[in-house]
Length: 427
Image (tube, rainbow, N blue to C red; front, side, top):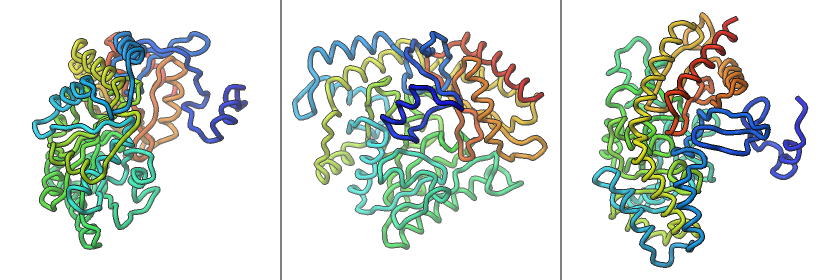
């Protein structure tokens, strides 16, 4: 395919290999609510980006950003009431054991802080995660990415198979036995770290296993895995970068999944596009971390972050966006479930609030992942004006994760485009 002049310039300026979505990349110049507009003025319904959770170009957030930047923005070594108030408000939204916040600028940084916090508190270094996760891109955090699939376990990091009901670890077993089988692998990962001499520091999980493909998790698994980590003397880290801020229809994904973490990581939607992330925990854990690390981040805990972060929380509450996510997500799940019955290449439809995946499989080959078909569907939907993408451990799910301001009308229009696309690939 012939590359556009802008793509060629981009490769020269950023280097070849900087990722772009879609077979024919989009040149996006403007956003408004749940919509994006390209350089030719064509409108697309954004069904992928959770960063602008309260909408692209949100005027309340933009005004708060401009007002604070025009007034004051400095690093955290000065007193500022705004950042203190924001930390108080953010932690008050979380469970009762969460009392303090360490702010940063990205989910990667926030996860790195969480690891340092757990290691400082336990005196041990071992981390346990799933085998199809992604928590960030720093040298440390990226070592967890798809562990055992595209990278290798180490003395400090061990993985267990992510729990799911669609392709369970034990075929033909009931849900309880499937859950037990996965818990056995968590125990084995923890034991492996302890036997290696590294020791077990923390279990980290995305609260809804988003990058794993949003699987249906055996009931009780998350709570029991957390209990297992605590019994072994470790801490539990919930990655809420994708799961939190109302995405599931509740404020936090750990509420939807039924467990109580010691450390919570939040990121992307916190600033609606402004770089803002946080690691929250008890005062004891945060005080221990600060005493042992002297952590400082030049652009974090800033008045600008506080003003924008407060505006985002205001907009979620004002627009009742948790309710919106729950209501529209449930409707889309029902409607897409009907399509699963109609097309034998749709293997499964799963959801957590306004986060849905449609799993694509080969016809007549039960549960055999069809990544090529998923990619084809994503590109066809883009041509019809709806932006989704692929994801999951096998890269065969169509991922639907729009801004929380996504409307019933947007859902209606998407279903029309989805039906048209299903008809095309079914020919």
